[in-house]
Image (cartoon, rainbow, N blue to C red; front, side, top):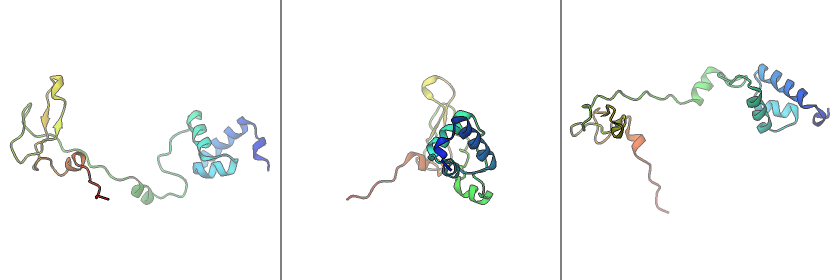
Amino acid sequence: MNVGAFHSSDIKRMVAAYWEEGLSQREIARRIGRNKNVVAGLVNRMGLPKRTTGPRGWTAHKLAKAKPKVEPAPEAIGPLNDFPPMGMCQYPHGNPGTGEDWRMCGHPGQPWCDYHKPRMTQKTRSPL
């Protein structure tokens, strides 16, 4: 079958049908003789619904592994508009420069609690 001879409306109709079946962009591209980027662009421009469950064949277990869980940030408990005492997390919540109420995290940890420490530190590369 000469896929290159399809009219663009035929391709759009095929992409929409395959998308509704739950095929992956890669599989749709293979079937219509285009690349995955073409399919992604068509899906976006056609306004097809975003996938919430993943491509056909993915189980809830695989989806849970693919998306890491993000813990919610702890609520700031430090004193309002002031620095917390020593030994408490000093991660700021709010913006002190705007005049709005702001506070430091205030959870145990020096200078950051276990939740904010990874956000405030970087891994160093080993020397060559």
